[in-house]
Structure formats: structure tokens, C-alpha cells
Image 1: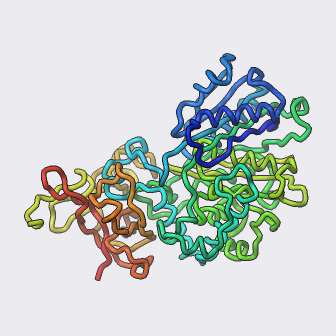
Image 2: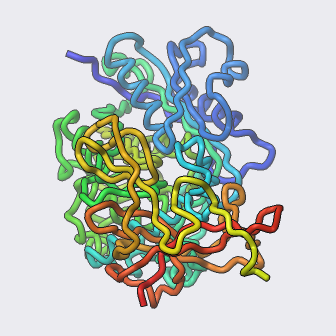
Image 3: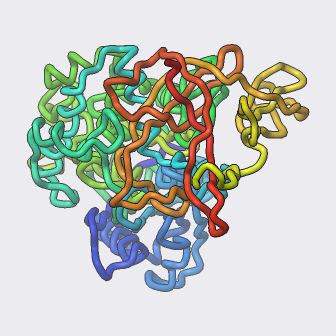
Length: 382
Length: 145
């Protein structure tokens, strides 16, 4: 019988652009805030998993936090870096090796679309040289095909973005806090058809830290423990359609999101119908739409009427991306997946303030997706 | 004058060039027949370790597409357009029947003229000029008139 795991402390450094503040410093701030939230000190941490994509090796932060000699393992797993740090921390406690530890992620990216290192991604130089190798192109092509197959409309994409910025305006940790109308979103410059500027999230900056412990000791640190019921990470199988792929197979296979979602639900022993709210990877508006179905929350195509009917709003039947998601927060890769969990902990504690999901939510879900075809899912409950 | 410049491929081994009928070069798994692009030594479908080089078909249908609406960052982009001269270009996956879907630039960038399922053919397009005045070329797909 494995040990249950609770999240007893959460800390975040504001997402956005922070001149003169390194990515690492933002991670350190997140760690200190998480420790304060749990009422513990850095010296109490028995282990850490941490990562960033562009802001340095996480384990060097011990020189700022304190050289306590703890086990610190760096994690670098693309867009699932934060999810992978959390997966590792979760299983470290479940296995009984340690009782109390931390998962931390932070980042600081240059402005504009991600610059892809083709060699580091196992791709030939010709691929980027020719004007391919942009993650934004994949997002445009995946949703364009999906709209063709399942009848999703352009207005639904604009509605997803409008919701994100509206939710972001209720979140003082978010980067983009100004609501935008569907017209402003639809009429902004077309970056990668059918996706406009305000339908894309931006690479950004920020940090998040989560303190985990054995569930039977959670009462020592908090009177509102949130339990991590599942954490799963999956890579792609043959036939799936993924970002940064010079080719795809003729035969079709569901992607890693479907696999990670199924694995997480099996681990938690519940189904999609039991989930009260979700944070789903929304690098752009189309991704949120497609990920609703890939994670099992609806059939393909049903998103059209669900979103038009307002079901994914904070007060709707199934709230999605209540903190504004990547669209309003930006995507500091190392921190992004942990931000989703941070938001779900707030929601399950009932501490989400003006954006609190009503009626005492009990189960919350997170999902990240990234290159070269990887997905991470968590399920939390009170 | 442009016609007399030497044309050099952006890389060797990805497409046949010079050629009147250029082809993309892929791999075929000796065990299961799966096609791959670009060429590689192992098969992601059956885990087979032996593949052979094949010329992929030149014609197919457009499976999905987008339009690159802003200048890609350089590097890795090697086109000699700049933010002022940049023109949007199409990008899509073309399904080569019985083989594979390949990602490529498209010669058409007008969303009104791009349709999923339309017939496409491989062509070679200029990308940039190198230091010696040669024209660097890459592959693309064009709608079949």
C-alpha cells in the first residue's frame, strides 16, 4: 500500500516581465513563499526537484536559500518540466523515501515566439532554416484541421481568449489583466492562420513552488490539505500529430494527452464526470478547445456549444483555466505546469478570491502539453 | 542574371537536386514497410533497426495548413527576407498516398486559396543567397493547377 501525498504549501512569483530579476530569483521567491504558506523553513526540506528551460540549473538556488545538504535533482522535460518535477516529488513521498519536500519551477524567456534549437531537438538545421520549426505553426495547423473535422468556429476561439483575459483580470499574479472583447481578439494581427495575436500566449517569466508531504502528516502544516490523487506523464506514440514534426504517419493515433489523462484517471480511481474544474494547456485558444476533448471532458466537437453556452466560465458547469491560463499568465516553461496546480490548490482551499469557483469544488485537474509530444496530468482533491 | 546563379540545396540528403523532377528523400523500414521523413536509421512504428533510402512521391493532398504571418527568428531561419521585406508564406502537411504526411512550405499564402484535400506537387523554391552569390534553395509544395 503506497503512501498518500498532500500539498501543504504553495508559493508563486508574479508571472509577466520583470526587468532586472533573474528567473532563478523568481524561483527563490516562490520557494520562500511556499515555505511561509506551510509554516516551515527551507532547512526542513528533505528533498527538492526543480527545473527551468532557459533560466539555469535549478539546484544552484541552494546558494541563495541555504546550503542544507538536501537531495536536489534538476528536471528538464520541455513543457512538462514542472509536471515532471511534481511527478518525481509525488513518487518520492509515495515510495516512503522522504516525508517532506518541494517541487519548484521557474523561467525567463526572450520576447517573441520560442526560438527552437533544431539540433537540440533532434532535427536537421534545414528544418528551421527553411522557415519551419515554429511551435506557432503547429498550433495553427492542428486547430485548422480540427475545425475542418469537428465544426469549431472562429468565434469560439475568440471566446476562449476573451474568457482567459477576463479571468486574468481577477488574478493579481497574472501578466495580462486587461479584459479584451471578442472583436479586439478576432481583429488583432493574424499570426498563424486561423490564430490571431491575442489567441496566442507569450513566453514569459515567473516561478512556482509546491511543498508536498505524507498525507498523514499534513495536519502539522495546514488545516486545508489538498491531496494529490494522480500525477502522470506520457510521451507520444506512433501516428500522433505533434509539434516540431517534419512528418507524421498516415495512420492516426491519439496523442500523449489522451494517454496521460487515462493513466491519471485510473490512478485516481475516478472519471472525468467527477472533476469540478480544470486547468488545460492553452498555449493558444485552439489548444484549450482540443484539450477539453483529449482529456475526456467532452466528445470532439461538443466544445462548440459548450463554450458558446458559457459552460467553461468560472460560474459555468465546467470551469476551465480559472486563473487565465497560459493566455493571461504567459508561459515560463519551467513554472507553467506548477502554476496550474497552484491555482487548483487555491480553488480547493476556497481561497481563490474573486475568481473562486462556486459550490465548494472538490476535485480539480491539470494538463500540460509540449514538444516533442509530451503531456503531464495531475488530479487533486480535498 | 539570376538564372545563371548556381543553386545549392539548403542541405544535402533531404531532397534530390539538381533534378528536373526533384523528390524528397525518405526511409522505408525493411521489416514493416513504414515510411519516414527525413531519412532515419530506426523505425518508430515497429522498432526495426534497418531502413533503406527511398524517393518519396511528388504529389499528394493538403492535410492541413496555416500561414506564417510574422518573420521567423533568425537563427534558425535562413531566409534572406527581413522584417520589412517579409512576406507571409503558407505551411502545411501534404499527404503522400501510401507513404507519409510531410511538412513543407507552400507556395500559396492566401487562406482563400488553400483548401484541405487539394492536390499539391513538390517544387523547389529560393530561400536566400549565400556569400558566394549562390542561390540557396529548399523544397515546398505548390497547388496543382
